[in-house]
Length: 85
Image (tube, rainbow, N blue to C red; front, side, top):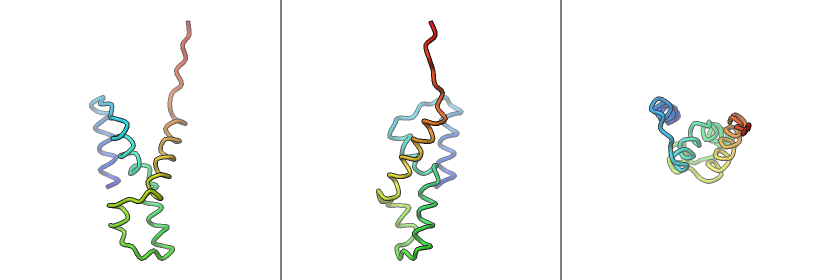
């Protein structure tokens, strides 16, 4: 799933395609690495739910922090464009 997300981003860059905000966030949640980290933490704490169930039906406790961290990272690395007249 993580590799597939990176491949989607590579395709967007290679073809100069601009994804919709929804597609970008959906893919960004996966490629942020947050879901993988949080699922591992849940497993270490003894969560009895299967890993596939957590990843396939990602609860908001996993997806929301992933969205926030992805957007935060993107804002930090975005170029600032100023108008110089």
